[in-house]
Image (spheres, one colour):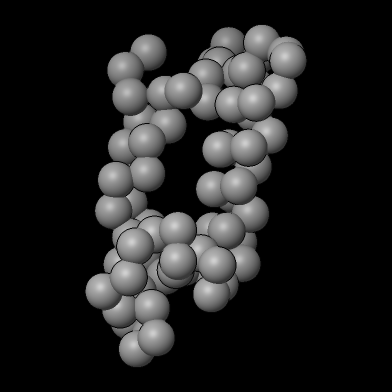
Length: 72
């Protein structure tokens, strides 16, 4: 499967949980490292790329993604 590019509009606690789940749980687990969406579809955590984040809250504007998700 080719890369899945993710663009996020609005960074809050749900986005933080999604990013941390993919980045830390799935990529570092000892299992097969795939997310089963249905019986016929598997997405590997290495296929998911976060490429852009947009948020209009003043304290998040112009900061790197890692800092923005820490703010929540």
